[in-house]
View 1 (spheres, one colour):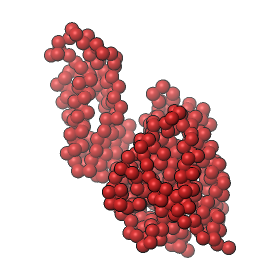
View 2 (cartoon, helix red, strand yellow):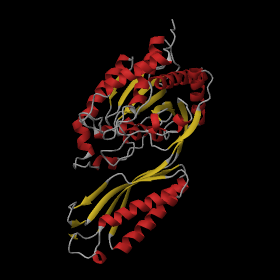
View 3 (cartoon, one colour):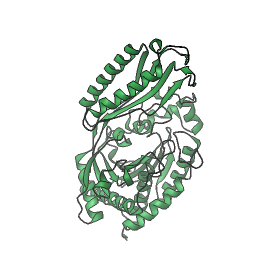
View 4 (cartoon, helix red, strand yellow):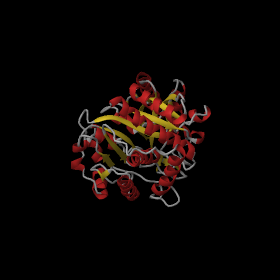
Length: 419
């Protein structure tokens, strides 16, 4: 007999309890730091696998380090609807980024199982492991593995300590030679849905608990190396210096200026490393990262050209060498219109005929990679002050419950459309 689904209040309480369990696993005591293939990532993967099994899914940790869980549909091995997000974090990150979406998928699967609801397709929940791309210079590598777009060169990438990704994967318990086999066949995934905190202030400003993502912005990331000449801080005249630090600082300000000149564009220098890094030495070399994004592929290309031109001019004027190595070049990805409508129907049923706000995502998500394989969509959840990638990240239990109930209703809407 079919039972009723849990209320939003019950789902929110369950989500917060589950998050408390998942977020115990960290590589830095007192902080939530769970980088890809770290010991804490392995612990979190095992916890997630167990939670999936409790929810009635057959689960395993795959060759790339993702956790996959599946509840079969009428035909074993048939197409699935996939709910996914990630369990890796940035350094000293927030409790909800990625983790909420994984917990939401597990709770949705559990609620459907407990209610005795039989879907006309298989249901899968996936916890990706390399969405933040903090430890290695990759781009959504674990979701790219499922989408059939994994770059083998990533296996040779090294982290800040010099550890090769392939070696870290083996130590984790993964299998570099098994990654190619993770690629799903076209048609095997009917839809991919990701629930995620907004990571911005729009929903809070508009007093909306959830929103539907229309597209994910284009993004480029690069490592920049500026090489000048080290010298004594007290003896090298200012007009004879080839100061890599001041040149790099001017480049960072140029990036800021270029981004500010384009509507909805952003530019960030997040890592800045000075060598030799001594008080009384003119810096001889600097390495920094560069991240810039906007909704338009054409605008992003124009920004790239402007950045290279301005950086080149600064380097020539200051007598320093410049090397820019691009390691992420992600095009803007629209979300599937029909899936957006299914999420809209789910939100309406979960919140009493409420028309959900639609908005773009300025942050990258695994949905970008999965959109190359199947129709993809995202549901955003209100996030206090829009703060993310920070221990100050916060949201309410009530909003989490509304979002998970909307996710459940969207899955049922897809089942109705199938039937």
